[in-house]
Length: 196
Image (tube, rainbow, N blue to C red; front, side, top):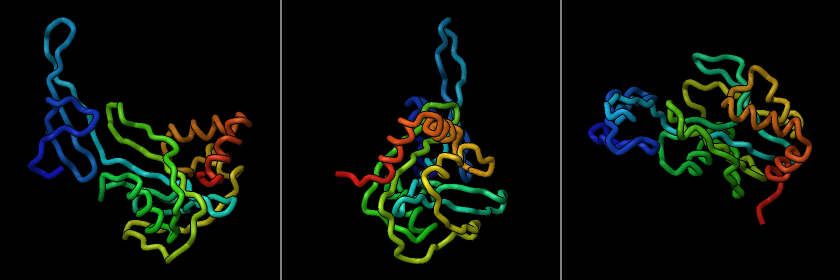
């Protein structure tokens, strides 16, 4: 969207209008007819989508120990704001390569959430299988990232780690897999098995 374009973002009604545009957030408002016939102003906040990548190298998963200017001691998956393209898979590939130096030819969308909230912030979790290191990372000026890898069991245990920086919805997803052996095995298979 350009600064002159007032076309509503996905998830907003066609009569929504942009009332504020910040660096990350946009505030949209619209007139909403109520059940009694009156009209009220409704409002939602939109931000560009985020991608996170579960990157498998052999039977291990890449994680990041990172620091940002406003956050310290973070454990995260590779990922970030999808602010360069509307193609979220391409954004995930870019983030993985920039932050870790790894590439994959086997990608799969695991889950998406955050499309229909008061704050519209789509978060997409991609699986990248059989990752190979092809170059050194190229970090942004606001990133200090050290990559390492963990086992699948350690990955599930991140759901209990207060330093794991991800969405609450993904924490719940991991907790459900951790507490149900069948779900855990399905997730393990999904992450490490190559697509047919």
